[in-house]
Image (cartoon, rainbow, N blue to C red; front, top):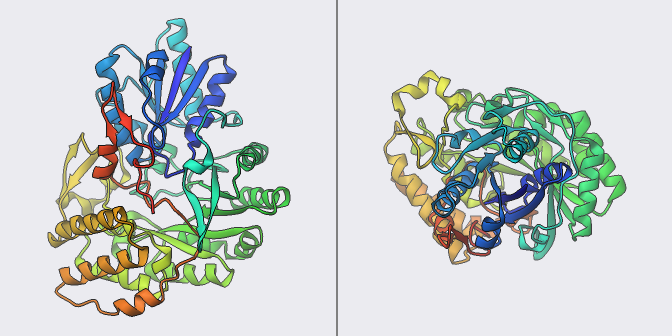
Length: 475
């Protein structure tokens, strides 16, 4: 069967989540083509060629964009079978334009869906797939070149970046995260030979840095450390970055030196907010004090922290946001935080573990099928306007090419103004920004809502069209 796999957005990376299912389907004899509309134009001829169309939805932004593309496709080819697969697939199962959804370890489910279409036995049932028997080497040929994607920036230098995963799932159950909804505390190891052979493919394409994009790299820390030791032995010139929880940075502090020695430049960690009560509602497993300790531990080993933030939640006050921006200044993180992080608002998709939090009930509204999230109202109404203002400041500043430190100062000034205070210190912040520290040139975030720019770039043209380089915000 002719199968078209589409990625709408994968955080500025060449999309592993179409390369991997392409391998599984190709092995079963299907004719597979791939399209990444974050950097490629929508191709009506490919849609006309396809007998089945499957959208990768590993994050919220990708799902929102894929939904628009699927609805447009159904207007021109109403009988074309459409599947959503990936972490956010279940959030789209009631949407028009989507016939089938597969969450979790989706490759076996995709193969079963396509086989059912091929032999006329019908589709496999929708749902979660948590069991995994084997991993195929992802098919990278046929995808856009790495120079079309986010780069590693160190000072004025930029390097090509590849993206791999050494494990799936997560052993934790942070309530605002989609991973525990799908994996329910399970993790799945990707065999080391598959990871390293995939890296070899990426190095052949010019990669000098690898993002290891596991939901939490230190969930299976022994496996993870074996991966990076062998990665360093085989490709000693490569650098890399990983993502892990604050509590794992502290618990596994003895391996941080080995991460640094094998080429880890920075660690992404979800700090979220500095209000310990709200962190407890999220079941984050750390406190604000422990977040500060994680920074010290990483830097003592020569690794830069890159915290991610979720400042706007039902319980957030303006003072909570002030705490975040002041923490960033006090811990010399201005050059380590993409300003868009300071605009992120809590999303509550269907099935979210947040729905079990009693403290949320007074603020919870109805489910919005357009945003794929439950509506909620804040305890502090001033935060609604503040979030809108900060999102506008960041988006427009990035459109005009403003420097990150300048945008941060504008955000900080707006936060202080919302509290009726004067931020001050602007000149000193701009003099000590930490510019030049390692970072990726992609500034968006997996749990963010799409911007107006992202939607406007997904224009209808015999279905839809994406304009090269404009589907995601670039710094």
